[in-house]
Length: 277
Ligand code: SF4
Ligand code: SF4
Image (cartoon, rainbow, N blue to C red; front, side):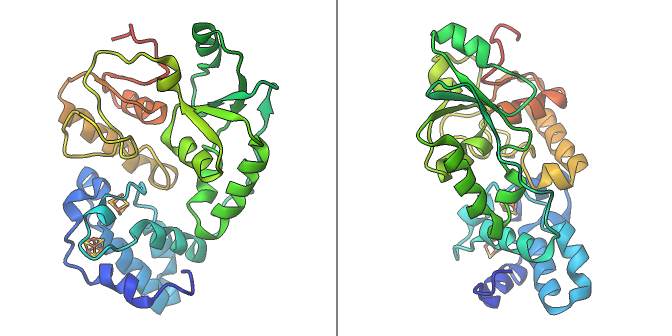
């Protein structure tokens, strides 16, 4: 933990009667009591008191997608996401070394390709705009950015890589990394200027707006859950599939759309051809 984090801040969640359990998509979507914010912060509290509890806490703090719903709901403004990011730095071993991404091309606008689909050629043809590309297999250092002590260094590297160029992103994780690095950014949606006439299923990091209601506002596609507990991440997508009950939806995030598609949801993402459903 960050040595400046007051013990009382962790203890407040650990001693809370699970008041935000119903808004935590991991707790609801997996049915695991160990995934409630209260249980996760309890594991951190125990690890701070007893080093032998650290292995358990190291696994438990990744039962989270950093959606922030618990802290939005919390009546005492608990900074849960920051607490867990700090705990990762303290309790977990460091991940593989961060490799700075490379931009291919010299145009001022860069397409960020972070999934299986390379939509840059189709978008360039549609808009008549020449695009450079940056391919990232780790969502611009996501595993490092969710660790409090490493986030700033990764952000600095990204700012250096872009140096005044504009990015086009199709995923909220990459978009947030670039926003933090003060990179000018557009969404593929805004450049493409068309969306399918389907009800929208908004991911936990999409801007607010009309949305299909499933009462479970996160599909589990993001880190740390998807990296550390992929089977549970898949369980959450399956839960969304059941709740959508055959409803075809538009998902404005390629990562979440791909995750839901893998569970059998009739979903279109912002990089899909919109004629496929
Ligand atoms: S975030 Fe608030 S409501 Fe949720 S466990 Fe912590 S103190 Fe309780
Ligand atoms: S940030 Fe989201 S997933 Fe993580 S504990 Fe809070 S509600 Fe659950």
